[in-house]
Length: 316
Image (cartoon, rainbow, N blue to C red; front, side):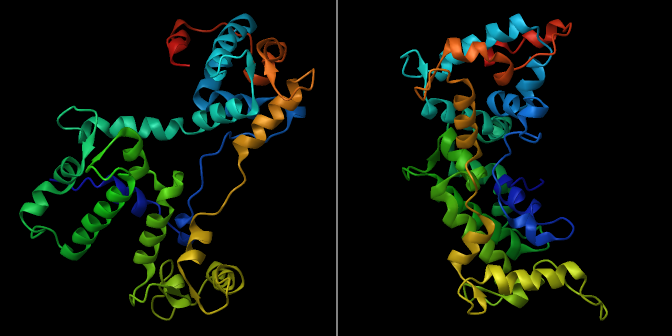
């Protein structure tokens, strides 16, 4: 049986690639768009931010009339309080929702694998048995690095308990999402930091010195000289990572490094869209104002499209 620890795999996969490995530990939120935000060159950024990257591709194939029709239906969903206006709060929430869709799809992809009794929840026992069941029964005797597998089990259990906010031993879809993608949830920041320190802190003193920091990404062989990027990382450690200049990274400093407090691009995009379409300057937009600027929100190439592009109509 092959070990299938998704949480451990996702974390370890992020640090197992080529140099500079250290940057692989930094957790960034998903980008709103692959395009630069320059309305002078078109509205591609706005389309992907508003619709999501995949849905924007579908809209590019629709005629203007079809784009407007679908946009009108979307506006009804964004206006959650049904007052006839889209506020900044509502638009911000919608854009964040689209931004998180890739995470939701990842969770959905693996949900049935772990929800063994089909009760729409995943218990720790279900996850543990699916992931480690065979090995636990043998006390990991059939694997070479027994200590690593036991450490992975301990790590997964700690993360699962942190995600399980009501401590009932089972994860709802939201809790399981926090388990798989802890960087997306404020209450999971601590466990991400603990896991990072646990990976790098070789002497077990609960903090990271410069040798551990460098050793995590570069081990010289046969007198090999440090490449320039490693020299740069040493300087990063002393000049920026070690904020209090005591020669170590403590938990707070590790948090600043691996979980940077980024600009809320969804908030900025919501403000931008409202500013660009709010003709009466009341800080909210109506369906009429949005449809008058439909090309900014959804766009269209007015091309002849295939029937398959209509299949996701009800998913928006």
